[in-house]
Image (cartoon, rainbow, N blue to C red; front, side, top):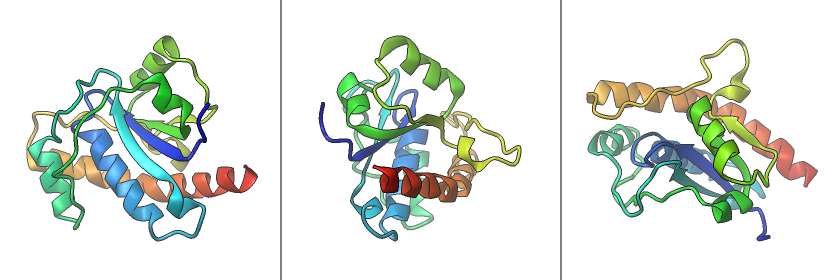
Length: 161
């Protein structure tokens, strides 16, 4: 098994939510001390084709907060990605269930992106695919709201390792 130095963000096709989550979390981790700063953040989809670009509204929603997503290429979630992930964050419960059904869970840390927030926060992030830019911005903002809880969790598990 490879060294676990990656955090993987998962959605369906890896063109809307997970690429935004990947870039937002990677941006946040760059402001952290080691070993968080060295974690590699990637994204994948449970039903993704390889090589697809991010949706135009995903690109626009991140551009509005100064983060670039133009060069994203989708990839399917594979066992190798799971094996190299210290943690996996899914957008919905159905994504987590598909991982349970089709892949060996070699990391104990598979959560919903907003699950660690607590306080009765909505845990799932709905798919904005095909909707207007405002829907993508709302998706982005719901991810931004969850980032501090994810960073705190990653801090905890990397200190235990």
